[in-house]
Image (cartoon, rainbow, N blue to C red; front, side):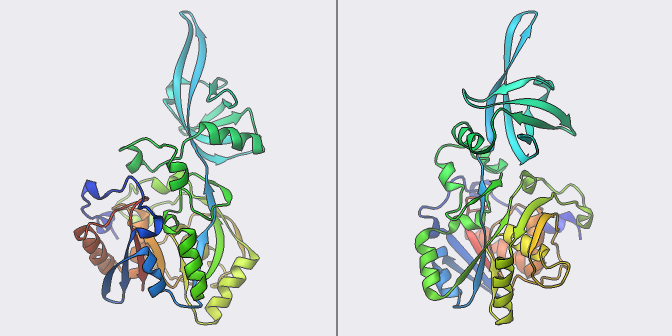
Length: 349
């Protein structure tokens, strides 16, 4: 398999920079057998049946983008530089791994001030990434970060406009509760309380799992032989209860449908060792591409993905490459909105 096998032409004006309002009014492309149907997310009620189980990622996105000042005394007097920080992952001792720009403007041991409450010292630099030790921890850190930080919008949105206060609502799922992601599980952004209530009334079941989506989800694939690509690792958890719920649905012959590629990657990671879903916790770097054997997922709800991305490879593994090419040709021709704030698809193998 070559990287070029997963390429397609995408007009720039199809990249969504704001979500649909209300969330559930977004368009939904349903691909089942050889049929493609144009619908709305609210039409999930027609496609989901009593006993179907949606698997939802309950990770909560942190406002991981920070802008601060580095102050320094020099021969010319006091000087400062603006430092842009993207938090990547929490570490021990109130530290975070982070990207700093421009990295050349700050030295180890210097402090970046983000607000009256929040600052951080650069402890070390390893392979182009910094390690920051913050002056606060726990709830105090969370509160100060909420005030000073901005949502870490994907590069293809951030290139078109800066993040604002509205994104703190828009880029968060309505069921977010486990803090730790620096990117949203975006297929889940289409659900609102009214749609969840309507699905529950129909008999659709819900199971919550956690995968903290990392900034590595946006890293490009740089190798032409896709099988040699190394995935970034992300922390996830499938609890005993979640595994039991999913196993019961499988045993009853009903469908397990992850909402988003993050939920799918997590439940398939939890089934790797035994061949069936089991409680699981740890870091997963599972890479799903054509030829993969799915052990848990029976279908997938997901957004429309970047050309030549690992997520294009994932949906091609589920549906077949030719079939996904037809789906994406249709989506472009019908002007579906793409990427994190875009429209959705329901893929049924």
